[in-house]
Structures are given as C-alpha cells and as structure tokens.
Length: 369
Image 1 (cartoon, helix red, strand yellow):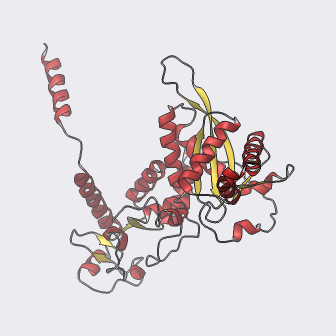
Image 2: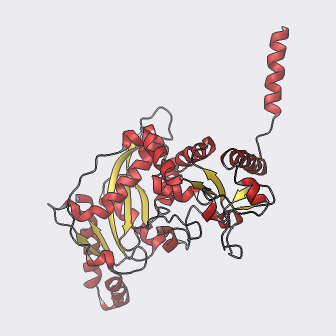
Image 3: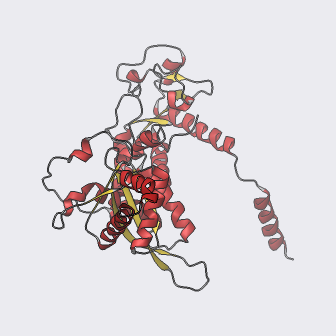
C-alpha cells in the first residue's frame, strides 16, 4: 500500500472513531455561540448589566430588565422567577436579529418544523430565544425560502358572511367537526419494483377550537372513509355534528349511517337497549349547499395548511404507508400548535393560545419541564 493510501486510511479510521456530539455538548456549543453573539451585538450593554448599572438611554435592552446567568449568558429578566416552567422559558436568551446567528437559528427552526409560517416560527423561537427584531426576521426568512415562495398560492379577496352558530358556540373539542379530503398522495409499495399506490388524506377540523385531526385513507370508497371516521371517534370522542361538502364519498357514508340507524330503529324489543344507544349517539350529518363551496372555508383552510407542510417537506417523493402516517402525525402536531391569537411583543406575557391547549393542556411543541 502506498503512503498516500495509508494516509487516507488513517484519516478515515479517525473519522470513524469520532463519536457524534452528545446532547450536553450540543447545548454547551449553543450557549457558547450565543455568548459570542451577545459580545458582538451588546458590547456597550454587557458591562452595565454585569456591574448592576443603568443601561444607556438608547439601549434596546432597556425595557427587558436583562440579567446575566451563572454561565455568563445575557437573558430577559422579568417577574417569572417563581413560575413552575422551564428555566429557559422564564428567561429567554437575548439575541439581535442583525446578528448572523439569529438568522441561522430562524432558518434552522423554519426547516425543522416543516416550513412553518412567520407567526408560528416566532412563537417557537421565543420558547428559548428573545430576538430583538424577531418578527421582521421571521418574515424575511419565510419570504426568502425558495420552497415557501414556490408553494405560496395567490390570495383571493372576497367578502364573507357572519360565522354560523356552530362556529361561535363553546363546545368540547371535536364535538362539532368538519371533514374534507385532499390528495392523492403516492405510497411506496413494500414489494420491490412495484409501482406506488394512491392514497388520500381525510382532515377533520373542530369548529370551536380549530384543532385538526388527520387520517390516511387508502381509497375513496365509503367503507374506507367509515373506517377513518371510526378511528377519529375512537381517539377524539363522540361527535354531535359532522359537516362536509357534497362529495359522493361523504354522501355514501351518511347514507350508510342512516341505514344502520333505521335498522336498529325497526329492531325487535330484545334490541331496544342498542336502539336507544344508537338513537342517542347518532351523528347528525350536515352538507353545505352544492353551489356554495365557501361555506366550507374552515376545512378548506386546514387542507391548504396541511398541503403546504407536505409539499414543502417531501415534494413529489413517495413514502411507505408507515412513513406517511408518521409524517401526517407530525403535520397534525404542527397545525395544532399554531397560535390562535396575535403574538404579544411583551416578554412578560404568557405564551399564545393554541389548539393544543384544548387537547393536551399546553402547546404541543413545548418542551416538557
């Protein structure tokens, strides 16, 4: 073996022996990068904070009550010292949007959470970092993303009517829901050299909380949709009303439910208990008018958001059925973590309300403390 080949072999062996960084090493690296970024961005403010002096009048940190922790990291102060939440949530790390590190963090989180929008991206970043000028930074990252730019549809401006009663009446999550299909998506066959098969996505939307539930459906038959509906009810609880458009699949499912209901209704006295249960638990199915697709704007918006995450994440790539189910669960988690109200600019305010608060009691992307 030549000396050059021996040199390449030894380098390859060294690379193989190097272990990947651990969780603690990654956290320490992140803190070190933040410390260096703060020395660049807040060079005039750090000495005043360290010595307990008043900040200059023109300081951007003046209203954030900055503190320095034991690791030498500049953090937001505030009055949440006794709150039962994670330490990084009480006192986020201060960064400037003009520093390259803040831009790199915004791009990394934007890609990690499947090209999410500016408001959601800002909400995720604020769990750990308080970026001065972060709102403009997240908008810039979103608009400069090539995938998001190509997938952004043209908005249509049109007048809308008042919300229906079912949209403004407080109920249990998914008690009143809407459903729609999107797709098809291609599923890779587990058998080698076999062409991909088509599948569809059923999206259920809660009228009260705007929470989303996603199911993968193998075809457009009534039996397949009824199976997805049973899974939805088993995981989310009984529903009182289900709204949809006039698609043939949905009409077939409604007819099938009504046929079963009538069968129990005409049963003999030995099945009276089953009949009573079915009569009390029957789903009331409501269809929107055929020439008025804008009546289904709630589930159409959910379909659009889900398709945005899918298109920007996998494009035209086909996944296995297990991979697609996993991806749809992640998309559902992202949709149920989007803010329902505008984000506040005050660091002392609580985190924004999301559909996840109604489902699990907190933001579904929040780290468990």
